[in-house]
Length: 501
Image (cartoon, rainbow, N blue to C red; front, side, top):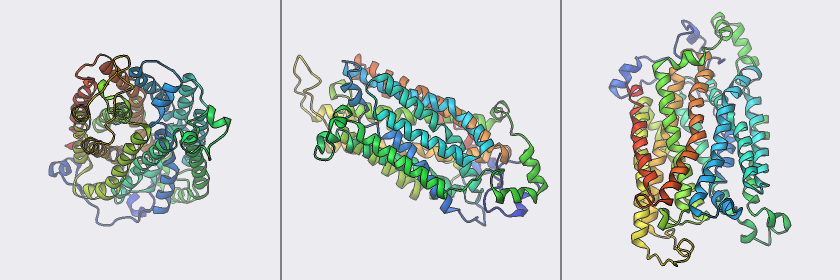
């Protein structure tokens, strides 16, 4: 159940019913879409920056914990001898991420319901503590089942994302939402950048800096340092959030209780139960957001997983043959581009164009992001002389990690993926605008993110399996997976057509 956004004028409450959309527009969405412009509000409510930045500081540790394993997970599985076939490493790394996403999908709606009863802040902080503990468990993993269980527990604790989105929705109103959501969305690419840097830099830390990381512990756990740093970040953020973050749930704050007591309409709104998931999914725009969110998440999560596989895989098998440090560098560059786009680009774009138009436009960049992968492998094949030993053609294949043309192509692919990720911010804005009533915002977020996290549960295993199949059978020089994803990208853009109108 949601209260009025912080800073709203008392007069805005009058005339509101349970069927009133959460975002009020001076013109209908249809007219806005026909003009391709976003209707602006003349008076903007001051943004509660302290609370927004505090929330971002707590939220950022989730992508740090998620992405810090990406640069070295393939090497870690190889050193564990999970499989002796290099082409199948991607399958097992995909399973680990599928375990994480499956757990998020199972936990997201229960977390949202718990936040309705105990408040948003306890759900956010308790889930973050669980992420820290699961990261420490991953650090101590000695076999593949242990890795999978640790990632599953981390996913269960990360299932509080719908409650976190509700916090943002309760902090803002429709006059400043377009300004706040891109900044809030920055926490994920920034966290991904920091996490990838930590993972790429501190993987094999005992070998790089033996005078610092020495002893039997680091000999047994050579990949422990990135997880240890990530867990320290996470515990610090919990302390920071416990001190500075304020509760936003309408029934759990004194200010909102006073506001409830002064408004009969707000009392009705608080007592009326939110609509069921089935009722919400029957609304055309929410149904479109759910379906398009499925494709958006499938494309973005597949890209995150398969890019590391593609960069790790030797050139003859369809990849680039990068080392963990270079993979981490590429992911960090991606995060920086995403951050700049969120801060400098998206607010200006949303002031000119409606979220539905930007959503459709951003989804159109996913086919380009995936199509660049076969191009990069082709450039690598052209640029390098492959001197392969007959008995072991994989180990002796050189890497393309220092070739300028390859890095230009990588930047193009990563830039296209970050433009595609702009759709996430638009999705959140459209969810807030499409909620049938303020007290339905949490339920609407839960329905849409249930679809999104279902995709996260299946996409890593499906995409990594398709990648392994393509490389094992050398179909289209190991690039069959990329062209399949290009087709899915065009389908994903097509599903946003309703939201553009």
